[in-house]
Length: 297
Image 1 (cartoon, helix red, strand yellow):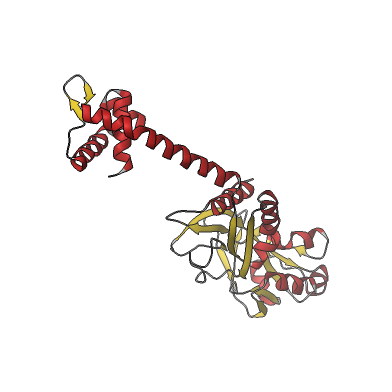
Image 2: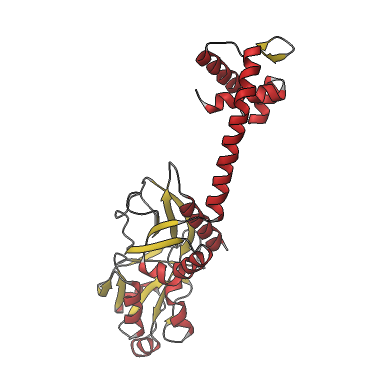
């Protein structure tokens, strides 16, 4: 026997009609009739008397409702209490994976705020990567990634964008010259983050059909760590194309300078991936809700 079928009978008894009961349960009348029929088939007895004007319970139906309704009420009360308790004081261990640059400059301050709000939740960041093929629901509760994501068993919520900008040290630009057009970059030392060896640049002020230039000249340095590329640029080794949130502090301090501001690299989406199906523990749900709200602001 299904609890929804029993709730259907109780709603009919309370509302006095199929239509009102279906409305109270927020289901179509046909679904309500199907549930009632299934309950009567399960019990092997008629529970409701139907005619053109009225709906009433049979003596067996009335007795059944009177005995079962207190049990249903108690079940719903207990469920609501446990639900409220788990949300008021969620606890558990969170397993997170994220790229190093995104973690350092965008996520870590929010993680700290979350843990301060929820003292009974612990957080483990034992895998820092932006590879698209290195996660599964068995390994992580929540995964943060930059760029378009392949289909997976995770749900993907877009939580922001990463905009890359061209930067170099003032000393490098003074000694080597400041490029003014994407093609000029072919004559400069490029510092690339793996696997972003090619840079795509489009005129911000151009027409809709403005040509996009792909810069794929040889790279002087290629490193998977954005912070290392940033430091190499500060040290004057070449020009880098890095997310704005990674280089914002260095630009404010005068350690790096931007160039060709009228040219832009298409923004890349930032995703929060989490379990799509089945039961989601309260501590995981609290974390994803918190991050959505914080990043949405």
